[in-house]
Figure 1 (cartoon, rainbow, N blue to C red):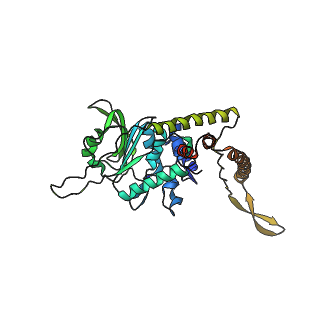
Figure 2: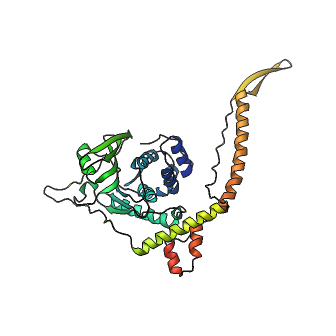
Figure 3: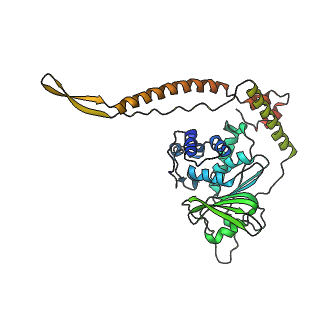
Amino acid sequence: MGGAVSAGEDNDDLIDNLKEAQYIRTEKVEQAFRAIDRGDYYLDGYRDSAYKDLAWKHGNIHLSAPCIYSEVMEALKLQPGLSFLNLGSGTGYLSTMVGLIIGPYGVNHGVELHKDVVEYARQKLDEFIKNSDSFDKFEFCEPVFVVGNCLEISTDSHQYDRIYCGAGVQKDHENYMKVLLKIGGILVMPIEDQLTQITRTSQSTWESRNILAVSFAPLVQQSRAEGEKPDTVQLPPVTVRSLQDLSRVYIRRTLRNLANQDSQGNGMVQRVPHKRKRRRCRRRPINTYVFVGNQLIPQMVESEEDEHAEEEQKKAVAEEEEERDIGDIEIIKQVNELREQILALPLPESLKAYLLYYREK
């Protein structure tokens, strides 16, 4: 499923295409997509396919097409502090983007059938926290993943504000999914080849709307011998953050706000460097014949369209050079102000490391 937008050269290029095609429509969703590089969730050797609007699968590892994730993120209507459950959480790519929006006071849980995929998701999450330049720009709700079949969730499990199921749901499992949702909550899942948004309006009523036609692999039903008890899935507990953790969140927020105020006061608004525009070359030679003396000699003559294309190309090259100069200046200004502020605090090195989430850069 996918192919709705043009392939991108990198993550930002892909997001530009998704915006242009109206799959990404809100600023918070755009920021989350730009912060998490889709290519980081591909295996080595497959990254060249990361920025195409196509699903990707290798063994048990699977990523849906970017246009699908875009529609899901928009349909969930995420807000800070909400609880989120990802059924079929896979690589953790979507859950990590959700965590950037719901923030440190939210709940972010995922259930995945395959143990090796859960291990892969935890590895990718750890790499994001330790290495991503985006981590310090957001307040984050770290996803917690558990292994299990999402059709075997314990009946006494808590409910969630937002739920996404990343596999095809049969009609007879629809009510099972709905009861996991809080009143006022939103569930997004594929039912009968339609990505569907379901809002719980009361204890016994729901409203549904179709988002777009999709094709998902169906949910896997656990096979067991007659009379054998199912392996019940216990969802992670909803825990209250420790005072130490809350202090870290508050200190980082305060320092980030101060850094932003200083940057604005100094007129140093950090922006992503302008992307270079692709050169467009359109030359259509017209073969004509001219008389030289008494001989007929072929000669290539450029059309008016060629001349117009050359002018466009020269203009694009000039813009590219200008954007490169601006981009180089802006890159110099892109300093991790939050990190600098923390390192300047009169605190023991161990506390500074804790405030930095033990990141080395």
